[in-house]
Image 1 (cartoon, helix red, strand yellow):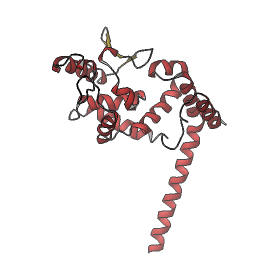
Image 2 (tube, one colour):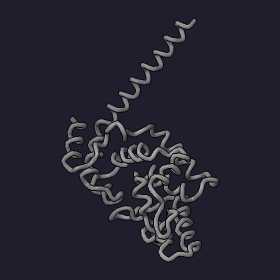
Image 3 (cartoon, helix red, strand yellow):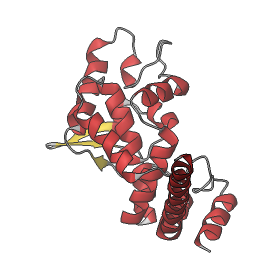
Length: 213
């Protein structure tokens, strides 16, 4: 029933079913494993670390990330804020320092007017990186953009009211409500389904190994 309500809500608002086959969440441990690597691995370029963390922690799409402008990163005393929606998000360390580093590099290294507006600049002057290129860079560091965003949305929808989620992430409130309903009901059903399918595969392999003897 929860899934049906979520699907109906998404269709009525012209949005994607949050549990469709192409955007199902992946393992929460995998999400945090990749996020920890991006937070701590200084060999990865700062831009790629920030972009990947915006996906894994704040459920942003590649198309949204590339349109982010430097004026949406602000300071509040000792805190760094990013404005993804109507309500700013306070970035944790070390993501706050990474974001400031990224913004500062755009302000100091550009020779073309307005190019500093894009934290993720593209090859064309005054334009951000293309979405397909951003996706390739994310994949190179183990970030599965669609699945990672779905997992983040599931987790955030379990913690925050739909209205607050929509304002913080810059998504439609109807979409936030649908994800909240889905995470409250279908998440356990989905996890049980994954576990059952894994058990079947393990049992099948064990049987094959026994037969091979």
